[in-house]
Image (cartoon, rainbow, N blue to C red; front, side):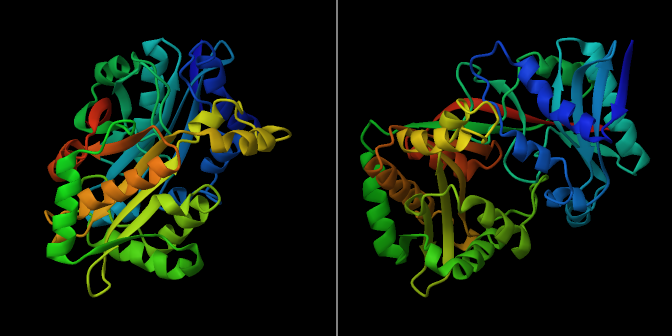
Length: 373
């Protein structure tokens, strides 16, 4: 017997968090998330997205065994900015049984319809970040980079059989840092910096509030209004994100570009790909996870570029290329041999072309779906 229930108890939350360990136990590419982080994601106390509108998490049970999960909700701040009653789904997982997937989709769609949604998109990030955003549909040949989605290939069939249609794809780029930087990039950056008189510097953790305001200015002036799934974050959201990143960031891999008058005009944030470590922690920091983390973190040789933004008035002036160059130079000094840049919206042609010009190759594709209800 198959049934779907809302997550309401501590036991339900544990089952929701623990399900992937059973589903992916034979998949060598899966990277276990930290259970503590996932538990926090399910709590409005720790997850600001859940404070922006109605939400619910569901479990699918078959003969009493948990066989699937899904989350759904509405971001009323985003909806007000876009002028649409839109809901999202997130954290979908299921055994290889379409009836289970259908029951989960039914529960999420019914919840969202009852709360006024006319459109459902997803998979979206459960925390309004870059994690779990989009369904992996190409690039199953290795473990995911930090914050990237990972799922079995048959999830695509489940979504499309239910009636979800492609909204857009997000592309993952790979950069081989063992190869020389393209000469055209080197020359172009030098010319652009002389012509447009901008500089690039690493972030300063000693002047954190200044940097937070710089990031806010850049995001406000670089997020296109016509993007369907994003608006510029609030100052509070930026402070919260910075607070989360401080323990794991390497300041020498975070760069801010500034105009001659000091205006912040570009930002690039790269982290070591901590999935190299997470694969060995099995979701736990205690009692020995912290020790493993400290022992292994300096062995990471892959970077994860997860944000690169340039204010609109400095598009086509070499700022993006300069941010790539400074990031690559710093990564090589740290001994990195490669890097992932994910995910770039396929309709963001300028950033797409900049990534290609910096030597990147598309190696993964993540799809965001939509369903009219």
